[in-house]
Length: 216
Image (tube, rainbow, N blue to C red; front, top):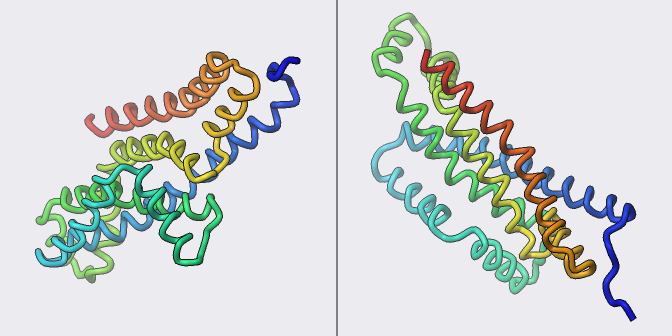
């Protein structure tokens, strides 16, 4: 009796669902993490030393503790408190906070890169503080950090595979189930790697193109 079955076209829908789940949770984490990172980065760029120390300590914890440990601890703690979360919700929360920790440093460096003389010139022309932020600091600072932002976004897209440890059916977990059923790890993992490459490489090349354009 053969316990294993080969890959077939019937598996295409299963694989596609894993791909869509991977893209979905990656986009959610990148969008939410970028928005939160922008706010936190701005606060750190504008705040005094004591606030920077408090925020910096929290962000250091998020950046230093491996993502897989954060995912397991969070889902275990929430479950023990009697509020179990859907794997997608739990994964999105932790992955977004993890993304925020890195994005905040990217955006803070962008805000800090705007020359102080340019800010003073904008204020001397009659701009308010909020107008200076909107029309000077954000456009100039964010333009400078786009390559770094893209690098973090690509890293988060790859790190999203770790959400499989809490039961989310993204591409890697889908591949693991197919490997268990078919015993064809080489073919399946090559396909998974090709998918990640097809997404990452064009974006990486575009980031380098933008970086070269900014240096001209």
